[in-house]
Length: 575
Image 1 (tube, rainbow, N blue to C red):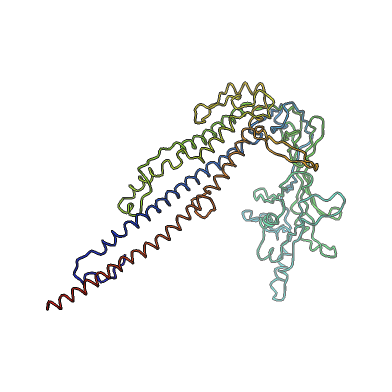
Image 2: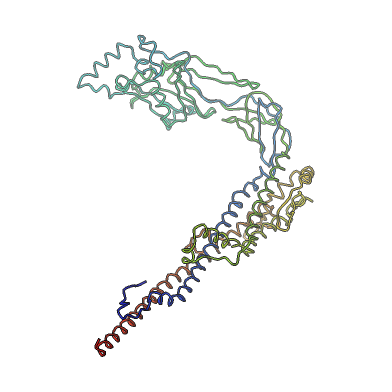
């Protein structure tokens, strides 16, 4: 409040601040009404935002699980020989037996040192294996190393920048047409400086392989002096190919690349599996020579005959007739597909639990007690209370915000209607949730499950849960122009799809009315109302400030008048 007046000059003894405060009471009361209304609507918006979040999570996360066929019609597969193959089946698989004969399993390309790495420098037979064998010792004898080091010490010599080791690595098989695909070729190289000054090792070679961006993994086993290259993917299309780098004329860039590849003594590892027992064979070391231009290994494809038909795959997984087989070794097995009744019952129980959890939460909000004597506090009221008192007051003031709320009740009704309406697309006596043993135990929509009744229904009609839960209810209509249009019939939809569609429709309406957060600027009806209240409060606050200034001005004038009269009186009376 303003205190710039001339109060006290007249000696009137009037408490102007108190008089202004009294004069402002009616205005403050009007403002407090707007403030309480704004707070109340903010609380309502927050309550609706919480409601939106809960229903959205249930609809788009929880319900989505029950729309999946593997949940409503789980199938299981038993194998007469799990050492040969195992399998999983989706909901569309037919309950029957399949014969599987595995003649070959898929494998990865794999190169491994046969024996140990050869060293050109025979004077150092035991290099420091903790840090890795030096590449210089693998490709050069001692005299050559010393000669090259002497050359590199000359100021005019640029030998250290020249490539000493260079070779090409690829991770795909050679094309069957005889061409050479270079799209994935990577050059791995080292300079003389790398070898003789930096002292690069086999561990550094491993790092270059692993950072080349190819589908390969390199490793070096220092304890066994063994280098390995693995192709990450199985199958004949995935290989490891090492060849010499050449210049534009086709000439080999250097001989040390050839020496390195040959001295790694890489053999190809072939793994076969029979009866659950894997056997690996390491070939003799391969070399690059006049007759062989690369060291290579290729993976192998899996081959299996399923129900009399031959299938090939680059991996050990083969899918046929909605069953995915995982091959483990050669041999034969009978795979029996059947409905997983125990899993189906478990999933139905989980649905009932999830539905009840959502419905109970809605009911709690709908029936939450209201305290009519408690409402939003004004700033003045809060200033006279402790924080604990404010928190306790607000807890009761916010209780029952959605008590018997129309929007909330529509959501509850949509859930119950979706559950109890028969599914017309099911041509069976098991076409309602009640026929599966799912019924409401209270008038609030809380469900109970009769497991014995559900087991009986599954025994009589194995597809009943899938059809009642997940039927799409789609109807295709042919138009006059020959095109077709697909619509969804609520009565034909399965319960889960109905819930999903109905609740998403309710969420759309809820978002339009109250938005999804407490923010006012969201275009919702409640947000617009809240924004208007805030604008009214701002405008009213401006008017209050002007009115307060007018009151002070009025009392300023009064004090001035009293002071003037007092001066005149004193003059006349000779005081």
